[in-house]
Amino acid sequence: NIMLSWQRTAYHFQPEKNWMNDPNGPLFHKGWYHLFYQYNQDSAIWSNITWGHAVSRDLIHWLHLPCAMLPDQWYDINGVWTGSATILPDGRIMMLYTGNTHDLVQVQCLAYPANLSDPLLLEWVKYPNNPVMIPPPGIGHEDFRDPTTAWRSPGGDKWRITIGSKVNKMGISLVYETADFFKYELLEGYLHEVPGTGMWECIDLYPISLKEANGLDTSANGPDIKHVMKASLFDDGNDYYALGTYDPIENKWTPDDPELDVGVGLRYDYRKYYASKTFYDQNKKRRILWGWIKETDAEELHILKGWACVQSIPRTVLFDPKTGNNILQWPVEEVESLRSDSFEFNVKLEPGSVVPIEVDSGSQLDIVASFELDKEAFEETTEADVGYDCPTSGGSVNRGMLGPFGIIILADENLLELTPIYFYIAKGHNRKVETHFCADELRSSVAADVDKIVYGSKVPVLDGENLTIRSLVDHSIVESFAQGGRRVITSRIYPTKAIDGEARIFLFNNSTGASVAAVETRVTASVKIWKMSSANIRPF
Ligand code: DQQ
Picture (tube, rainbow, N blue to C red):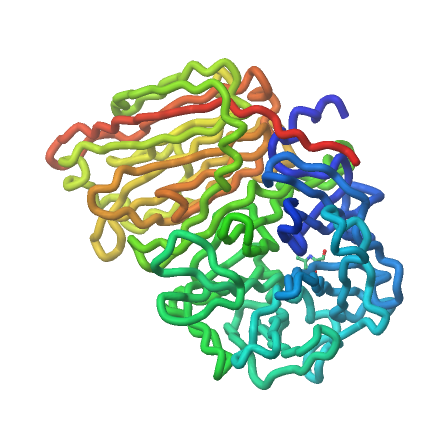
């Protein structure tokens, strides 16, 4: 066990031991942020799911609390599954969740705090007449789960929620209406559906402001508001979102761009990130996104370690007014309270260079890097890389004229283990210059039984913008944000040498610099790095 202890994260949320998956019912109540999560009390594998519970003043330091709900009723005896909170105008909290019944039917159930004046909300009561929704005709008994936070129906006297399902291979979202959270009526039609995307888990639907740099409460709608719809695709294990419009009268959500529809277009994260959920933080008027980060190594190792999985650092979500077609995700500002010593560098990165950065320990860092390119280099970009795509590119060893360049994190001094996070600029099929943002995990660990792949996406870069990366490094996790959060890659990696005080970081530019016009590619990096303190995550 000691052998793997360095993999524990220092400032990401984890239970003290055992298995965790989806974030559930996040909310802010009486000065405390509450996080519930899918939790197995008995071991480090997915089974016997309860609701774990923890509270925080600032989303960074946590106090573990006893489980909020256990599988102890016929309707949830096979698992207290994922759900969401709705805070009513009178302050009551309605928690809807999926119960997996004694005969494996997925049903929706209601719970509420026993005592609203308890800031810790320690005790939860299950509604005596549960379940409140059962699979409707035509819906599979095992394809009906994960109710959302409710939003107001038109007229304002009722509430709506959506629940994910599928019909054959079409992912769908069912909508129910309720006046009191006890009785529900299924509305006709689907809120949205996308053929070929399979079962939709953990749907999220929320408004996003086109004009204001703050979040919106879930019921907000009107001019200058779009709606983000997200589904977790059971068949491919990723969270996909799309921007669109919600018409409450027709009860339909329509994507802005059908080619970027839910499940076929943009992802929240281009590596490991699933079953995410947002909530409106009325304390700071922002919308916060939580996501579950799965392991990418073998199950035997989870049992050996005695724990599995982490939650992402919570992210604020905003509309990106500059591109108009994606959201911006950014670590909540509170994470910056962990920043301690800082280092700043300005480095000219010649083609083929790997430049060590002297920070004495590289396993807990907040890195902000900006890369400026010689203008001519941009204009001379070769056409040799047309069709470049991070996952099929061969990774950071493959040299092009304008990439790869970026940062190397969690590396040992001999570069036996290293994870490059980088940009690669190439012409697309349309002959326009495109920027790719990738993470190369191929050499992230010398250990076997670990997934090793290259991942990433194209990222929009506007005229005059430098290329920027922010990476939060935490032992076995790196969350990397490009262009202010237009694209995100969360790498779950398991170095064996680049650990604790042995972990190093480097800047690199593996482009060739050679072009038709023989312009030498020059990349100048400005980097600021903070060492990060550990969060205080305490037992009850
Ligand atoms: N996890 C829960 C389900 C949900 C899935 C069960 C997504 O409610 O669909 O642990 O990871």
